[in-house]
Length: 416
Image (cartoon, rainbow, N blue to C red; front, side, top):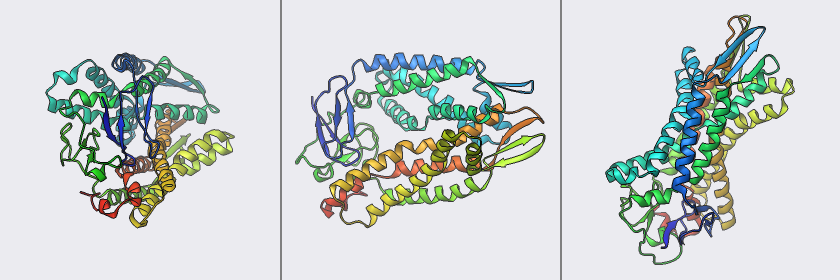
């Protein structure tokens, strides 16, 4: 059976036969990966999800990391990171840690198991639709792997001044991340949506060009092709192009830039040594790491906290300018802009690395008057900046780039 799809990057129509395992369907126009053939994906998702759940639950109830200095030892569990941030009047950061690395992935893993053992067939169709929508919207906001890298960077920061030991929970948490990422690779979104589909996804195709040329809309949720204003599969409103995409992106970018200024002006954390405060901004922390000789870590933090946020704001601003003011873009430029956008969207959440480093240090280094670390206002502003920049990337519609070498009559449909 053939499946008709429209590439969500360039709107090119593609007809795909049933793929064999590990076969990859690629858009012939922009070379974006559309679909991967999978074998026994349901069984693999259930097995990997159960392993990930077991590892995550194990990571919650055993010592995670121990910090020792001059005979004083501080041992924390994974749950302590959020608790200690709450204790220091940083509820935003506490909720961020608990939700993005524990509650959200655990909830998703339970849903993965349930929907792959037949829950979608049992639930009324309206609830199955809502459940799939919720799952696919939440997946990009899981940041457990970034938290793990933040832990390793934190250890490098304090290893020279104290003894560090990893508990059983650290290894369980690392195993959980591996199982979780492997699970995501096995999820077949098309197959899940087809379980609740009331449409055969075979619209009338008049020409082998783009969906908009055939008066077709690709649902932004389930990717079903339709000529109607409401998707028959997931009941979402459909559009030729995301309404007010450029305006939304620019508003979020301006907000991100406004948040980025205080994020760098205020200290991201305070180090207290013998009751003496040593505040550190993002750039100040990078310079300290460099002076300590931790060059690779300093470079990683500089890239994640300085280069990536500014580059992301610049790139998205440039794409908005190109879409708004360029009358024509050649195919090579369209391809390059699309790849840049994909990379920008992918690396966006890695800017959260510095926030997680602060969270780990605050939770771990609490030795009373001898030494302690507390969060600064800069961490809150920086986390908010990362969120708004991620929303900006999700709001941009890359198909607008590919409208620039097509008839202007189709461009008039883009916000309908």
